[in-house]
Length: 75
Image 1 (spheres, one colour):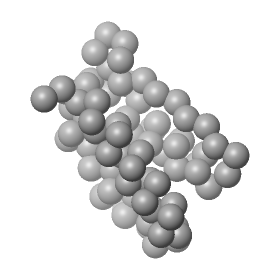
Image 2 (cartoon, rainbow, N blue to C red; image 1 turned 180 degrees about the vertical axis):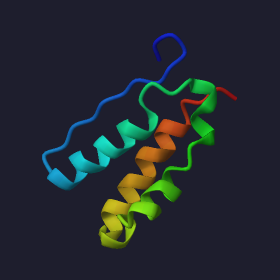
Image 3 (cartoon, rainbow, N blue to C red; image 1 turned 120 degrees about the horizontal axis):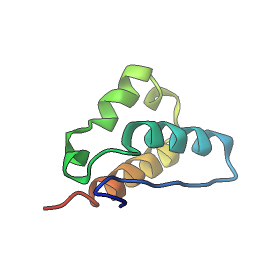
């Protein structure tokens, strides 16, 4: 965190995962740490209809990325 804001990046060889990381960056980068839990990434992804097109393994990986980001929020 810089200045109380979340900043992260990620990388993958798989283009679909790079796209998912880009979406999560758009949702979370620059957000105050105290507000991380207010972002409903699952709802945003559902709104985009992405989860219907992901394999179970990719969906699990995406949920894990979201969980890891949300774990950065202060208690």
